[in-house]
Length: 262
DNA sequence: CAAATCCTGGTG
DNA sequence: CACCAGGATTTG
Image (cartoon, rainbow, N blue to C red; front, side, top):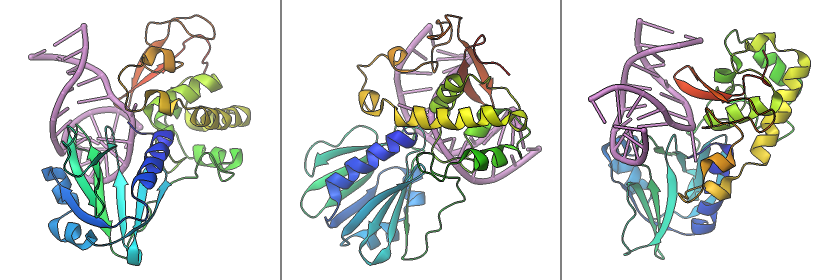
């Protein structure tokens, strides 16, 4: 469920639940997870204290005593669920971490795409990712320089973590609507002004993300949350035109054909 | 660049 | 049954 705001929220919940506690058991309950996190890695984590939890892009980094590191990526459908040891485990539990004092953290993920890996001290190298969008590192000039090397449509480009970290399929559509830019616009043809507008829009949608309203809940109406995402056939909140869906690079993009211009 | 791939659902 | 799903890597 995770783009940058949701992963930030997840990391905060994890931090609250386990920072300072000792790992008693680490289990992988799905073959896919067992491949990423083999038996010897799971054993190596046991007995170590959890020092701190941080987020970089959509990656959660769990720093362990002595410098080892658990790298967690939720991909499409991952999330944390917290219970006590001995309680009924949650549905779709793929990785389970239990602390010595009885906290159980489950990585729940129906599609099992999530990745958890253990890295020895100093072994983890952060993949090449672009600037964090909510910091001063995300400048209009830098963004423009990166887009200048792109000859494809802007929307798939926004999903490339090397351009800017943390934007996913929902917020890409939302930001383009906010900036009034058509998702098929060729990235390197965007004017300086529009690149700046898009940068500001990315920041706006991530800053004002309704994370806690919908995250992990099924009683919210998606249609009330998003400006365009998932709203094909419904009226644009800005101009009233009928919103459209456009498949790009295998993903759905939603946009307003009237107020988002090329 | 886009498509296929990793998986397991939910929905029409 | 077909199609869709908030990600990212690999392949053509």
